[in-house]
Length: 165
Image (cartoon, rainbow, N blue to C red):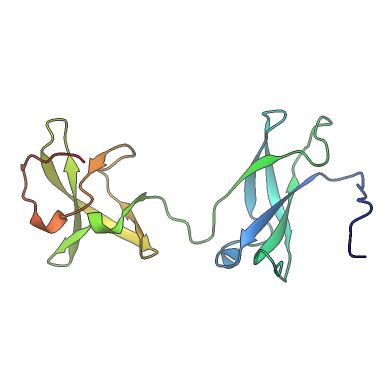
């Protein structure tokens, strides 16, 4: 009793099923675009969210979303694994940093950028969002891979040489 004895596959549209976390489900809506990459074929497809279940799974506290694959090829088989990329409604481009790396002076936010000589430079950033641990910032100066000071930002001065730990 309560055990799955059969699974039926219906021919027609191909879909990818993903689980959306309870805390983020309201950031996604039916019709949103998705990028899908199948592991087995290494091919990428476009798709869109067809439906998001209105009730969560009681064990995982996630909501099932079904993403319809646009123009699927015949080599897509039921049960194949895929990576799905969705952009939430509240997404904003930026760089995620540890919250301790930010400091404020006169209402403006800054980070210390470590240059090739291990000296620091003050860089102004615009704070986009935070979850209490990570802060998302935007700055025309910063780019992925830059080294910044994570701790003790209030005790550093411009041009100071720092040592990484």
